[in-house]
Image 1 (spheres, rainbow, N blue to C red):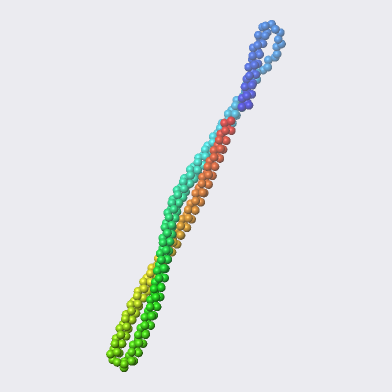
Image 2: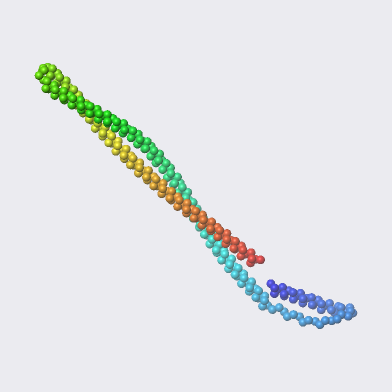
Length: 275
């Protein structure tokens, strides 16, 4: 640019010198005594080397600028692609998180249902315990009744023995007393058998109820343990997905920041070159 300015200045000086040369004959024709100065030789024509050097410099600078712009465009395209990939990963992570949240909600609902069943079974177990307590009381009463009937049977047998020993008091009286004792003995034996049967039946029912209650308690404990384990596993999976989502958000934010930095660098590179 400085060489072009110098060339324009020289051209203007030449034109002014030519005008002065053209004005000189007019002044001589007018009759005025004007001292004539010696004419200066014209300056040499400007050489083409500075202009070609400037053009080559401009071409080189333009080529470098194009190369830099191409590199920045490639870098910007790479950053945009990375941002798109990270956005896709972020969307997938969000979808997985939503799916895990729905699964967690389903698991929580199932856990609440299991807990409700546990509460119901616990209440049923308490009722069974109350029934068992009542059955134990009835068994104790049956044992006491059986003991009293056994004592009565022993007393009847003793009375029979005494009556058999006193058979000399009269045959009719003896036979009547013997029949009475035998009748009472049969009644006591029948009552004793009935009580023994009831006692065995109650023991069998009690054993069946106890085994059923124990099986229900074992099944309930296994169900609660499995539900709690599944809930813990789902919580761990949801926490992992939340961590992955945070990482994807951080990576997307970094990619956006890098894209903004690259765009700023590209604009900064364009503006100085244009000025």
